[in-house]
Image (tube, rainbow, N blue to C red; front, side, top):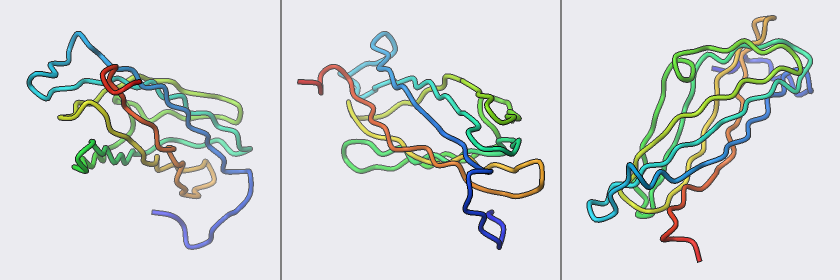
Length: 132
């Protein structure tokens, strides 16, 4: 999805921070059903306005099973971020194990037509039973 010409400068710079949360009320460990929410903050740290077109997630549980999630936008939106602007949303996922991880990328398009990916750094989903 990237353009043939790679632009390696700070004009196209999107940062992503994620805060995960275990949802005990919706989880049923006795049935191998663990529910997590995660709040994502996306910031345009570059100098070019850009729109988030699509998402691609890899969700890996403790036994190595991977769920791949692709789709347009996030939470039904395709936010347009001017330089210095941010967008925050909360979503969720379910796993069969009490811990796992998520990582991925957002597919972006700058107002000048340049397509680029914004990496979502790996973060961990941990139920309290896995914390020591």
